[in-house]
Image (cartoon, rainbow, N blue to C red; front, side):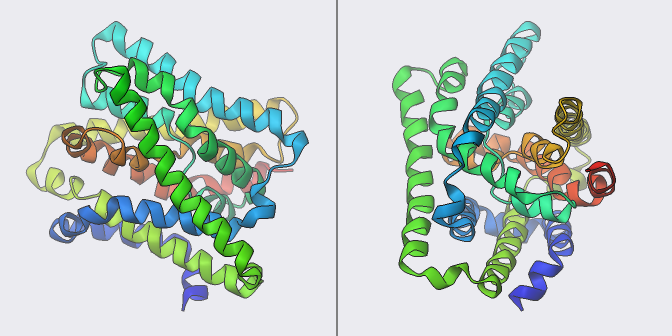
Length: 306
């Protein structure tokens, strides 16, 4: 069954998205599962990767380190400067944009790359390095964000992120080392199915604010949705074009996918609870372009990749 789910991953993602919007009561009931599901996805992604693949090659280091700092520190700090010019730095949408840009790639990035016809290995390496560096890259961003009122709260938020990453990823690496059979192709296909199911369940929970907003005719929903669509797809296209322009066309689709699709939901465990509640509509809208990436970008990436 899990192998079948892995083969039909696109449909699972779309089904979860549709269920979260159409059944707001179910989405609200699943809301407490958001953080556990995020931890389980980090665990599954690391278990799927294994210790050898999780250790990037030395020659890849400068590229992926530079990308992590650019995507997770420079971009959100630049966004904070822009937001401050318009007085939006305290708004939920402004906070959502900055946190989205500060986040590491989603744990399903390699899977999205496969579903989009791209090489998953660059996405895998970017995921490993971006997630490992997140507690460090996010510190300067948290420092300047208005939701963290003092240095202590900034450090506490970063420590929460570090604890989640260490527990999920460290536990998975220990299990993989103790149980080498988990690296067999059939088992890995099963893990891909579990990952797709986890992503499907997670998006149901994350859509808990979107269904009610649609039913209530909330005008904020549509301009937030337009904003996140532009943010995701424009980032993907810019990064894809930049890599192709430098002659790195083979890794361009994967790097575009990790640049546009970030693990914003992970920050729900780090920000103050009242802010997390207010962010749910933005987070829910942010999932839509993410889960539509294989449907909207696959033809471009597959055709244009040498």
